[in-house]
Amino acid sequence: NVAPSSTIVVPTNGTTLNSLLTVSGTSSDATSTVSLVKLEIKNNTDATYWNGSAWGAGQSWVNASGTNNWTYASPSYVSGKVYIIKSSAADSAGNTETPSSSTTFTYDNLGPTSSITYPTNGAKLSSSPIVTGNSSDATAGVSSVKVSLKNVNDTTWYNGSNFTATSEIWLDATGTNPWTYSSPALTSGKTYLIRSKGIDAITNEESPSAGVAFIFDNT
Image (cartoon, rainbow, N blue to C red; front, side, top):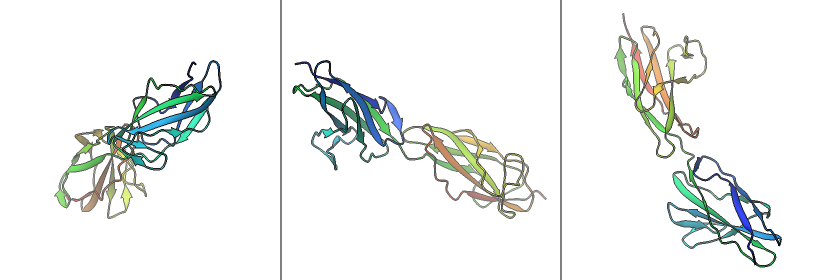
């Protein structure tokens, strides 16, 4: 009359994830054979449960594939939500595990946002600017900000040493919120375009906006 036990291996408790294709784990029974493993997948933020085809208000359990090493293809998760997964194994003698623990994770597949606060779009500058901006991320937090600097007239990008790159190059800014980037020497009479993008703690990247253009004139 001893129930089997099951363990969730993936995901790890307390993590923040930008991808989770499969929930997996193990189970065992000291006397009988494990016949079935079930999962309860709860969107804890919205208090809904996965029933195998949709999220609903009623508590629900779904069958995993396999027993001693089991898997379950993940449903669609929503970014910014917290999920709780429980597992329960049953054996061939009819004993069913009472779940004693759960695994909690946060799902986040959205990139941060960043903005350029200086210079302003359309500005005319006589000295190379220290570019400044802000960034934010609602879930995982911003880990870094990168910028690109384009010579619009010549269609070249700054590569960290000179303006010879023929495709966009992303360079590290200093800080995150606020962040700064010291511009290199610029050529008078040229228009430059600055773009920024944030990267969060679990490597989600922002899709950069159009950026800020300015004219450099020191003659």
